[in-house]
Image (cartoon, rainbow, N blue to C red; front, side, top):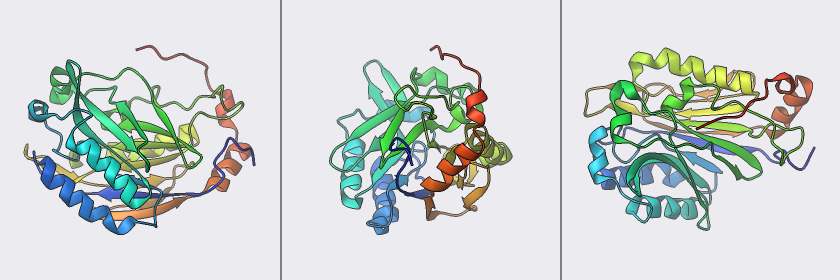
Length: 272
């Protein structure tokens, strides 16, 4: 197998939690309890979108910065678990507040992606600043695309392309979508996760919250791990749950060799 594709399987843990409304300290404690048993049995822990507050425009006023308690907490959890930890929070950077997906690795490694597509239907664009760059991180030999909620509806932004650093290979192996996706639109969530996996010949992991938020919106979870054929490997129902699934590196590589559809894709450049 080429040394620029994943050499080993990746254990991914979905954390489908019931996020408390506007309670960062309480949420950090709650999620710490949910993920504590994962030490030694996972490589990557995926938390929902805005897991410290819920999806709220009013959380902007209390947004932390990159030196705040939540960034420190994520780095601490990564060290404690011996695994990467990712999820999004509201973070202030300069003059703006971003819906920022953090990716913390053991030993202090930290990357982030700022949500590109803001949910104007809920006026997110009036309170938050939009990101303007796609972010792919490398972890345990896997190239991982970071995406947040509404980004799922815009396939061009997440299209797998060939990477100059990996000649002849797509630029990612796994796409992560963290979300607060209301149950009224659950069919779209489940359908689009499968579509992104099929069209990009990639694993896709979607992690949503459960429960009812402070705006009265209900979330049915429906978190899932989808393989490169669009088939669910793991699916969660409407309950708080932590589930660990192993992504198969050899099977992904074999499918890309067996059916190299991406080589026929259109070439294009993304503009901000």
